[in-house]
Every structure is written in C-alpha cells, then in structure tokens.
Length: 379
Image 1: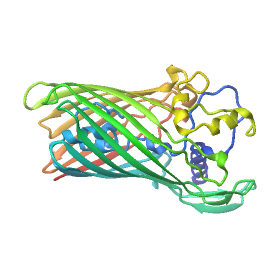
Image 2: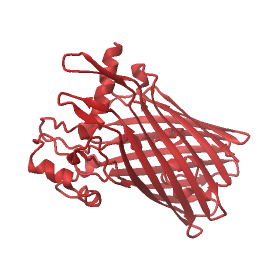
Image 3: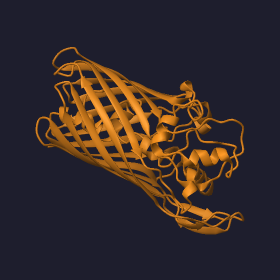
C-alpha cells in the first residue's frame, strides 16, 4: 500500500516535471504544462476558505501572497504571518505539504515593503529502474523567495511590484532509462498588482488586477531544449463590501484567472517541428501566444473562477464560504466548495479553512478532507 502511494507521488512529480521530455501519444488534448505549479496553489487559509478568492477582497495581511498592492491600506504598521497546508492527506502522506511565511512593514502612510517564502515539500520518494530495482531515495522540494514594494498612487488606487527567486529540486543525478543527468532548476520572476477601492472606509466596490510569475524558463538538465515555462498568470477580481452597522459587515467577490502559457504539444515526436517551435518561443512571446488560435486554450477551458463571501463581526470573528471552478475537461473539470473561519485574540489572528470533498480519481482535489491553518501576528 505504501509503495503504491509512493508510485502515485512519483507520477505526480513527473506530471508537473515537463522537462523530462516525455511526450505522451494521445489524441488531441488541450493542456498547459508548466514547471513549478506550486506557485499556483493559494498558500493562505483565509483565501482558501473562499475558493481561493483574494484579488479584490478587503485588504488583509495574507495579501502578501496575492495582491500586494493592498498592503498600504492595512491599519497595522507591520505584521508577520505563517501558513501550513497539508497535501494529499487522503493518501495518508504526512511529509507532503506547502508552508509559507511572510512579513510586511509600512514605511509611512503611502509606502510599504514585504518579504515572503513559500516552501513545497514532496516528501520522500524511492526511485526504481524498469526492473523495479532500487536506484535512490530522494526528497524533492521547491521554494520561492519574494521581495516586494507597494505604494498608494491616489486615495483610491495602489500598485505593488514583487521580485521572486524560484528554486526547484525535483530529482538529482543520473536517472531514467537513458540515465539523464538531472539537477535543480532556478529562475527569476516578478508580479505586478493593482488595487482600487471605491470609498475610504472600504465600503462599496473594490477591484484587483494581478500579473504573476512573469519570468524566465526553468531547466532541470543541460539540454537547452528542456527549458520549461513557469505558470505566468493574469487574474482579475471584483468585490463588494456592505457594512450593516459598526459591528457587522459582509463582503462578496469573484476572481477570474487565466494562465499565460502556450498550449503544450501532445502526441508529437520530440524532434518534430511543432515541438521545436514550442520550446523555441521566448518568454514574452509565449505570454501573447497563449491568447492565439495556435497556442491558446478554448475560452471555456482556460478560465478558473473563484467566488466567495466573508462575514465579519467587529473585525474579530469571520465566517467564509466559497466555490472554485476549473472547466478544463482534460484536467478533471475541478470544482469544489470551501469553508473557513477566523478569530482575533489580542494582536494575533488565526485562520482555518476546509475543502469539502468532491469527485474521485483525477477530479479529486489533493486538499480534500484537509484543514489548512494560518496565523497572523500584528505589531
């Protein structure tokens, strides 16, 4: 049983490890394959309780991992936060998880700086050859380190920029039937975010825009043809906050996200012209090509939608609910509900979220039956 779980985990790693160069023979399949997909996982329990909704909701410290343009709107001058997300908990794996930590500091009423770390552990994996003879035991992991700056442009508009270093160590050494020599991959990327609020007291409409993971390709071998795209993404959100009185309020929001990554050629020979053209695209051209008829995904399969709501009582107790939709039929038509809550104790806020189980097989979310935790320490 444990061996089956480990093999499933290896399959998960190899699926996201697009640079191994295995092109599956299949009919027409539309997928956007990228390296370091952990960057698309919402790391905080607050947005996790609202179907990963975050771009335009009222500012909160966990916006360190989303729309950093909101940070100058926070009341506290500085804060530190940590989050922990178990992964594949339903398989009984305890060493696969996403952990994150972050800090922001307001320099004055208009400017703030921030730093954050995301670490994704894939646990321990035992590799074998074609005859099931043991080869090596490794612990794959990935992390990103961010540094950002945010500024208020007007009373209503703010902008944030983030620089990101990405390190991905999936396998190392000579592995596979051809004994390909694998190594850790590194690259740089950046985010640009915008935030709009209608009123000074945050009541009314909000808007958010995020361009994330705009950066170089990443490679795990010395073969220049094996450079893989990272998950560049564009997200647009809208939110509406209604305050019933000084103690009670409710906020609704919707986020729409789309990968800016060209469609991966499936069922093509590795040496074919189609595959060569795909890997020869520059990073900037790949963003625009992802919207083209040749490399783009159908609109109905390319959008990921998050919708949710948050009830707030005196800024000390919160209840959340959300729904997430990803209509890519080749990736399981992922859809699920989420629930969450938070409570304030002195200068600390504690977040909990839960993903309601749904689907099975490929449609089953790795976070099903999982509680996610986060804590914010305000100063």
